[in-house]
Image (tube, rainbow, N blue to C red; front, side, top):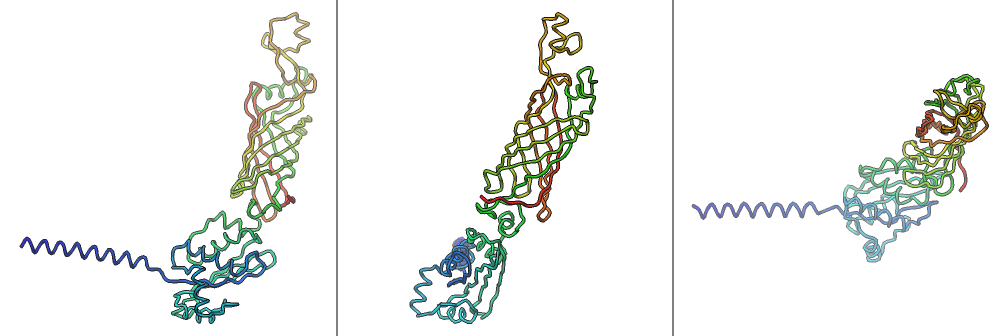
Length: 374
């Protein structure tokens, strides 16, 4: 009885190993697929090169046993086949039967105006019919032919594509990068800016004070307007690096004139339009060297007249002072809203707080899509 059980157990083990081996071998069998040439018109690759490129992209899918280019050349020579202009179904069916390939792959890459059209078809030799057809339109970007080919083939066989890459190659007004503006044109968001600045801290108190006390009799919230100039010096991947110069004027609504110059270095995300920037900001205003004495600020002349010596002077806003330059470090964040050719940048900013206070603000701008030659 024990021998019978052992034999049964060994039989089951053998059957299991045999079944596993058989399934593994079956899983490895992939249908054969042959690519001859792919028709091209107006693009940089000839039909033979395009055919080689398609084979590479099909191999990446790992769905077919793709006949490599050397075997294709051998089969053509062995069977004395003429594959010139063999892009249609009837011709491919004849050749597919001769070389015993289960599938044939054909198509074209053609330039129409500013659009490259990729058309691919899969021919089932046994059924004698075209079983899959995919057509995709791309921007005229000759250096991106391989990416276009891969995207079209992946779509044909229901494989996922990267949305960012797809948008850059197909959407004319997508956020620009080096891909869809290959060293020829780059978007520039320079244009008018306007918004409001809010002042906090000691400077806010000085603005509210009377002019007799060295104040400005103003509210610590000012309308500002200006113009942004920008220069992009890096335009790769999902980001653009840029340098911004923003001259502006604040305080017109408060009967004041405060010119400001802001210099920023930042990054813009080409996928969603967000950007961040940091840099110094300089403004012209009236300042005096003042000292705090007996719970009040006095100018140097007043302190001297009073005969006080044991005090410390500091630079302070003073409407009765002399014109000087104030500075701060500014941090900004923004997002560009796009509508067709219209760009609407919206930005918020804050200056790094100091003993004099800080500013926060928001600005909005606009321009049409403008480009500059590189």
